[in-house]
Length: 152
Picture (cartoon, rainbow, N blue to C red):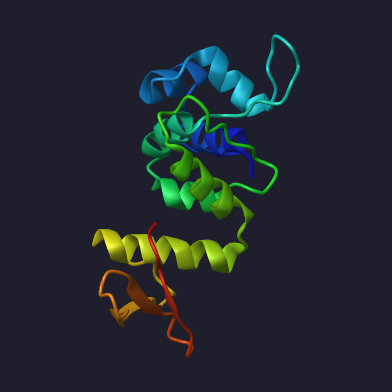
């Protein structure tokens, strides 16, 4: 599913015009139109939304950003430039995009556990200890596999 399809579905379910959605999201009505059409009205090229746009849509449609990212298909490109992200954050997001569904769930669970937030239902990722130096968590996926999460 593309981001524009998410927006259109939400608008139709909630009987909202593009203008209504634009006001709610903080995005412009012309941009909402381009997202739904998946092309830039000026040059006809595919629309590539930024992470900031995804965050605004996520808040508006009341879907957590991680769930919204999972809803989007592999064809949905996301612009990481000019979003205030570090090179390391861009690298992580690009790597995340290359993972299959199970890999994405695993990474999101690790992030949630490290951040002390909720775990994603259906996956059991647990911190089971620390490595020898004591600074990297060792995780278990509940299926007999354990691995280190190493921050550099």
